Length: 323
Image (cartoon, rainbow, N blue to C red; front, side, top):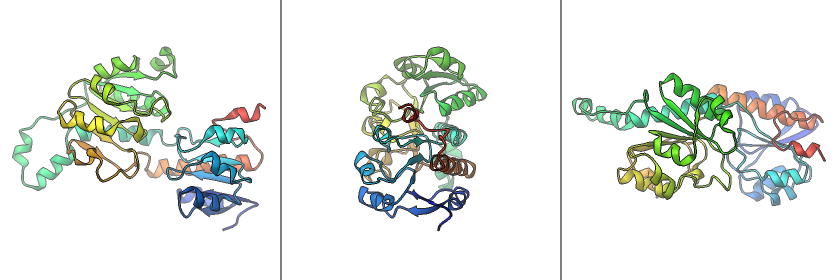
């Protein structure tokens, strides 16, 4: 479909409102697959790219896309985009700041509550006729618990605010922020070791970088408070699944709520899939109607700004304009 002088490629469909906005201003192309060859074929004549979870924007891919002028990430994580390579080519990389904050924060609490109340197992037990037996068990609530938030960006700060409403004590760890800023965002600043030792629930909201890959590994999971719960709505590679599954299987941790895995979908032999104490959702924390619409429309707006010669407001590599 053609709506203007530009061509923009989507790696996956986006919300219809975003697609309609884009189609009024540009020809829209869809990647038929997500390996580099398929992406290069789709991007060969493209001026802009909107990338979701599938597909990796690598330096070698960019070298095959001479017309590309802007990349927008449908979300905020850029672990599947080589930002440095784009910057060297003076291609702005944009994100959709704030568009999914509420949805992801809400999902983190969904997982906390569902794991603590053993919701999936309880629901299955009721259907098996175990009503009375289940009423004799005790479950974990949130009020009075300590919540450790790893990563105090927009989502982490919103989680801290919601934690206060639940009567929780939020602790925050974020090496990119000074202590006073973490405090201003609603959490008591602590180092990672202290957070892991004190928190009844640890919720991950950090970006995936070389420094945060397997941030939760055998050593750091071993620091966690006995009986704690781990929640991850950020990126699967923040956690060593084998170490986490062993900690839960041994009874040292009570369970985990996970929306993201490494890889996605997970391999069938991933040990977490066999554990009843682990609740897994398929990377849908941001998949609310409002959130998906905001991300789609914002990504399109950022792309069109760049293609119209304007400076996108959510570019994460502004240094390309300073040269």
